[in-house]
Length: 71
Image 1 (cartoon, helix red, strand yellow):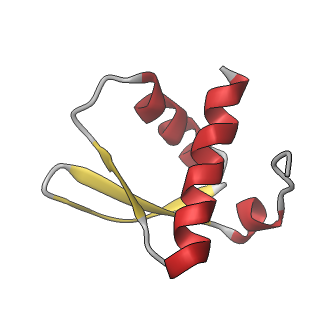
Image 2 (image 1 turned 90 degrees about the vertical axis):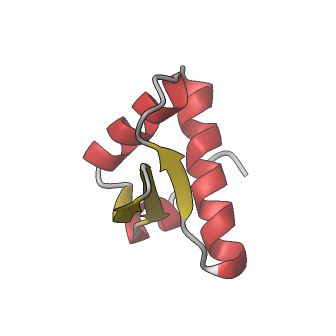
């Protein structure tokens, strides 16, 4: 499960660092990825920028941007 947390955190940081775009996740999905994103949101590593059309858009906080995620 730890690999999923790191993979999703890297994905969110990479999308934001490259072009300052948020990453969208479906609110209707029952996948492990959605649960991981909700947990990372609770830890304040990411913040929600809004919800539209059944998707939640997130971007990394300064806490996550400063982390070294196994680079």
